[in-house]
Length: 82
Image 1 (cartoon, one colour):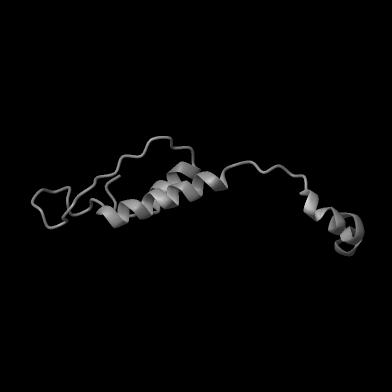
Image 2: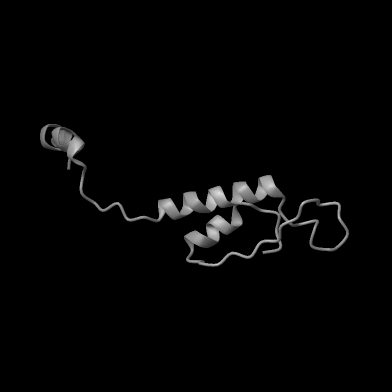
């Protein structure tokens, strides 16, 4: 990935990517063509957090309600037409 985006890798994970390649730098002003678009420590940390959020969103929670919702389902379901 040769973008400066920290969000694009999270989108890639949601689309099925299992490997992310991202350039890392300690100083974007260092010589070399990769340092301009490489992520610094804070950006890299943000990217990892977004990837972890994306992974958590992909976990199947099932379609059943939780036990703490049983009163609502049993006593109020008709109000919403279900």
